[in-house]
Length: 200
Picture 1: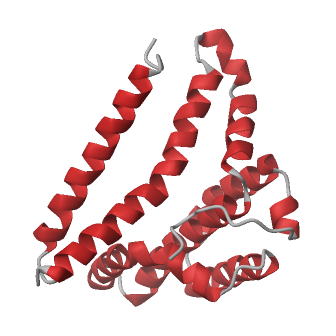
Picture 2: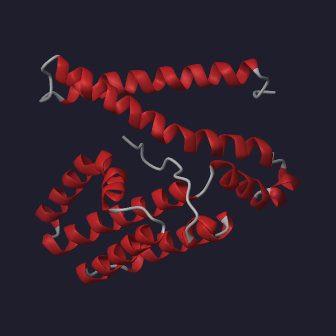
């Protein structure tokens, strides 16, 4: 199984595009998403994102893997908006969330973490004048990106353990161990950083 947003080597035009350009496009997509208020607009957006995945050599199954961890969230959000605002608004909200998640995942699927971090460090260079350490901020960015597949992996481990104990219908039996394991991972990561002097 491929974790969400885990880099997939390739030689497509999307892979070869500069990390800065991809981040700029992602930023513009996020800003432009607020203008989407019709189901057909969301449908067009999803089609464009799908074409980008195909150009990158990533098929529909890879796209599905990127949104699968969010399916329950999308169901809950969609159901809420169906009750409050109607089907049209529900489709728009769920579609926009899915499109943004897929777009962000495409960037990390086609861009090495080192390239993303280097771009982030360069962009934050001017902030050094106000006391920001770009290299340390880059480290935080790298750890954040790396933590996404780690947490997804922990979620699958908890789900497997839950099924083995016959607790598939208990949200608490799923959420509590996932939170505990995630916090333990964060503690171990923090201890490792402190041991290497990252808190200086």
